[in-house]
Structure formats: C-alpha cells, structure tokens
Length: 236
Image (tube, rainbow, N blue to C red; front, top):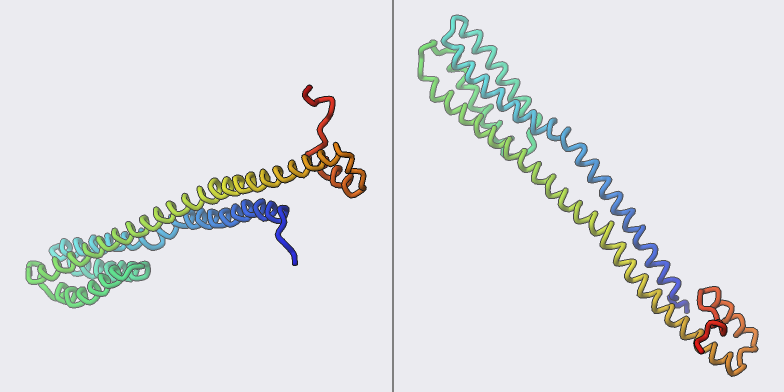
C-alpha cells in the first residue's frame, strides 16, 4: 500500500500556490473585462433610456407650447411622433421591471391624450390635466431610470469589493499560508534528518558503519545538506 511521503506533501504544498494564482488570475481578468465593458453597457442601456425619457419630457413641453403657435397643429403632430419614437427607444433599452411598467403606462395614457390634443382648440384648457398626468408619468420614468443606473453602479461596486477580497486572498494570504505550511513541514523533515545523522554519527564512533548500505545513507545525508561533522571544526 502506497503511503504519502514527505516529498509528496512538499510537492502538493508547492503546487497549491501557483494553482490558486492561476484561478485568481482568470477571475481577476474576467472582472477587468467586465469593468471594461461596463461603460459600453451603461451607454447602451441606462444612458439611452435616460436620454429617451428626457426627450419625452421635452416633447410634451413643446406640444404644450406649440399648440398656441400659428402652425400649432404641425408642431403638435411632429412632437407626438418624436414622443412615440422616444418611447420605442426607451422600451428597447429598458432593463428593469419598473422601467417597463412605466413605459406601458405612458404608452397607454398618451394615445387618448394626444387624440384630445389634436382636436382641442389652442385655448382649450381641458387637455391640461391629461398633459400634467402624462408629464408626471414621464417624471416617474426618469426616476426609474436613475434607480436603474444606481443599481448598476451598486452592482459594479459590489463586484469590485469581491475582486479586492479575491485578489488579497489569492495573491497574499494563500501563498503565505502555503509558505508557512511548507516551512513547518520542511522543518519537521530537517529535524528528522538531523536525528538520522546524529544516530549515524553514533554508529560511526562505534565503528559500526562499515556496511555499504550505511555508507549510502551517509552519502545521501551529505547530499541533502547534512554532512558528517568536520573534526577540524569541532570544539575543543
């Protein structure tokens, strides 16, 4: 039956640190890639969603202003088309349920309000409550966009903290733990080798180390850094 030797233990300990460092390197590389993609993801989703909400708000204000102008019907029609276009843009880039729900409410509420706005006279104030209500919905959408941006930032910060912990554990803690275990294991092996050398010296003093096998043990200990004491360096 094979037994785990001191050499096996030392090799296993020596292999742990580089193996952990490889894993940590891959994880950190993946995190750096994710951080590098974060600005693009923020632009493709949250920034365009927020910009679309601002565009809706601007379109509503221009409708309210344009209906009293000389070519008010055309201004209102153009802004309604722009409003619908911004709604489609926001829907394409929404990534939270709150944003999606707000956009559904805005789309459903805008149709009858815009119909009333096209039919109403320039000085007809009956459409004002509906317009104010629609503006409030757009304001809620802007709040949802801001909350989604903050959630993305929070996720990035949380991932960064995790990566800091992983990096510290993988680059500092684990190698030092392996070093301590390796040092203690090798120290125990060195103590046992010194004991073997001491016993062999006792046998040599008795003249009992003439056997070839014992000479080979003596040579092996010398090769491992445990030579026979030099009589010239012995204390008087």
